[in-house]
Amino acid sequence: MISEIILQAMVTGLMMGLIYALIAAGLSLIFGLMDIVNFAHGEHLMLSMFSSFWLWSLFGLDPIFSIPITILLMAFCGVLTHYFLIRYILKAKMLIQICATFGLSIFIRSIAQFLWTPDFRNIDKPLLEGRLEISGMFIGQPQLIASLVCLVAFILLYLFVTKTETGLALQATAQDRHAAEILGIPSDKMFAIGWAIGLGCVGVAGGMMANYFFIFTDVGINFALFAFVAVALGGFGSIIGCLYAGIIIGLVESLGGLLIDPSFKLLYVFAIYLLVVIFRPQGLFGRY
Amino acid sequence: MKILSVENLSRSFGGIKANNDISFEVTEGTILGVIGPNGAGKSTLFDLITGYTKTDNGKVSFFNKDISGLSPDKISSLGIGRTFQKLKPFADQTLLENVMIGSFVKEDNIKKARDKALEIIDFVDLIEKRHHFARELSTGQRKRLEMARAMAIEPKLLLMDEVTGGVDQKTIPGLVELIKKLKKSGVTIITIEHNINIIMEISDNILALDQGKRIAYGTPKEIQQNEEVIDSYLGTVDAT
Image 1 (spheres, each protein chain N blue to C red):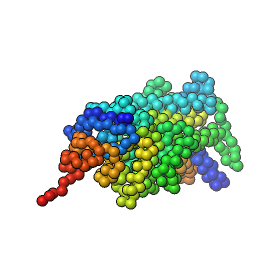
Image 2: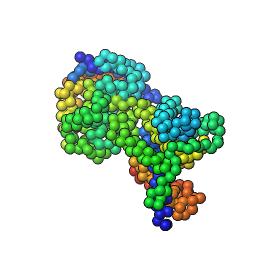
Image 3: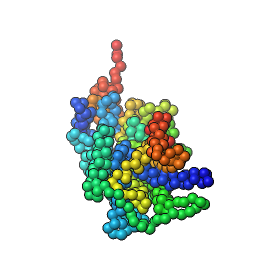
Image 4: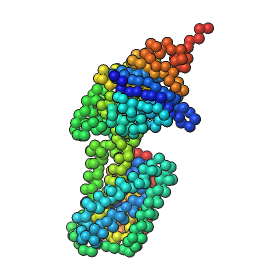
């Protein structure tokens, strides 16, 4: 019986971990490319969940069908973020860069609260609902599909970055933008693509989570914090590191909650962050 | 035919004139050597030609087309390649990937870009190292990597910044042969070199700089006899 409960907690943790991993991958991609931390990542996640919600509420589109639209909207949001904010602070001091994306996070959250109020919303009767029973374990169907979609998106992201022309160009720009420019790679365009992909990842995760999570203007905060932990644990700039780190965080959160005390779930995750910062600041797969 | 024309190029950093009113021309198919003591403005000149640094004044023309003010990626796409004095390989990528990235300037198909990259890697004699990460290569091999990567964009003009600098003596003849091989393949070259014997051996013309200014331009023989160059760079033998 105890082993079944632990197994159940592990599956739940693994499913959450895959979502954290994709959110963190978006954050890591942007950081790896231009050394800028997107402190508005949680707010971008919130926007993607609201995108799913409004597409359902206004047009009756189920999140599973509206997800391509949400991804495109978020990618477009990424391009706008780059061209209207980030490109102006690329050469600025780190403090200015931090203030810019942190300011963006406050701006997005405030606008969202103004437009949509801080009320909690949810998507009523989505196509994905209910739970499956597998070998005595109960797995929420929307959670399972969300995690599988995130895993597929993660694999596609990895293949894109490592196997395609644009992916190799992104990697080259991330390592040395000046050397890449000399080889005909326009860094400005690469940065815009990086933001589009980074927020596209958030679009996938947020769009899928809209199926089963309450949607409200502060929903992204904890996810963003977990994404920061995942990026630090996986190694800044390492996409594959995010996968392992996301899964570790999901498992720690779930098993810690089960075996010790669920009230301190966040504490276990941030304890990992502290340990990483102290003992392996470059993370598991980091370059720094 | 004139491939590059530099007219009255100037650039200052603070109060220091790194390049001061420099003019010269390069003929297609030749090697122009650039010499000068440390701080003469040689690398700045490369930065200005490749768009890496913006000019204060002056004009750079490539095949009679004004390229001043263009971004480095646009200049590269026109056919101007470059290697760096301080090497800039993509350390976390393999040698093959490094060169493939350059190939994409002219080739969209990933397989064709790969084949072309392999051909170039073979040209620079590093085919056995093609799957090694750039960080695993020796300095001499990284210099070849940079040359291969620059060649991959199919440059008509290649700017090489101290290709033989910082490598052991045994590696230098191979690199010099590679420069000659490149010239034979039709690439016009501008090369910065500190090794005066090499520059005299490979150059058709030499541009001498000192404190940001052009002090001489001519054939290696003319440069060897130029008193200003002798004073500021080649040095004099005290007869007493």
